[in-house]
Figure 1 (cartoon, rainbow, N blue to C red):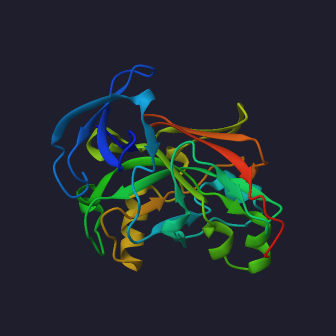
Figure 2 (figure 1 turned 60 degrees about the vertical axis):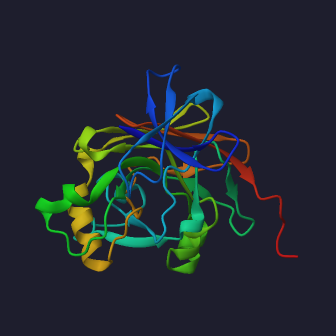
Length: 267
């Protein structure tokens, strides 16, 4: 099931997306599907007539995972891959949806795209054992772990570099966990139509089950929390006016334009 969050000229609502590409329709459902059953209201829209929003707004946190593809570790000159998942946090204020602009902050001169598979948590959980991971995952979406690379290096930690407003595009919808096996999905990124990242989730150093277990050992996870699973090789800078498209097999395409902030510094 594909769960979208959208607006059709009114307050944001959730819906089930059905149909083939180019002819999809979205069937409105009552409430938030993470907390309640997907009961349809009867309202239906052509997908082309609605504005898609981030499919989930994390009430608590986005947990990122660094250096989780060996080829990305190599391209970053990071030495050996981490023995345990390398975690960081992105604020929920960094989340935007499909087609929303990634805004380049005036503080940085080097902002990178990072295409990733994202895990959406469906229930309160802590210290999840591997065999119970399917019980706590609601579904999967696509993320761009936008990173101010120069600030990541100069700050010697990642909070500001990965936490600016608009630095966590999510979308276009959530595919529920019961309908998607994520062990070996193609993940690609295109910049202005040119292929720049080409990997598979089978190349993850720490797979989804391992990540959910490890993250839940560190943090209590709440419904709607998001785990970003890491990016394959090919990360690079984005410029004003460019468009980033991240595609994950079985989910869809997350597309975002890039814009300058229009500010030369603090007033």
